[in-house]
Image (cartoon, rainbow, N blue to C red; front, side, top):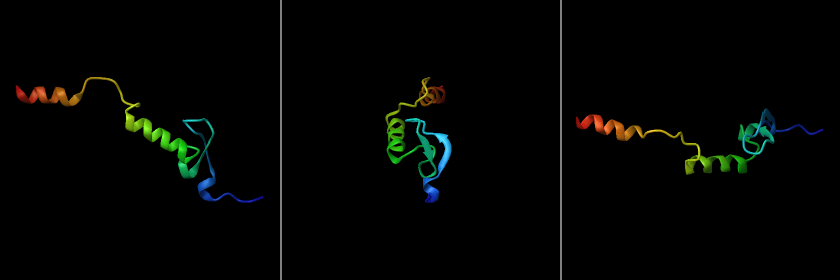
Length: 64
């Protein structure tokens, strides 16, 4: 039986994108592809929290 390199060892968790076992190298993801998909979602703003823009409310207070 061949021993896995440290990068290829499972993390014990599941990939948040596809559900496959995560690998230490791409933690918490299972591959570079899943990590890149998640990064693209962050860059598009898919994970934004809806609410009032704090910059616009701060600017109004300074004008008073």
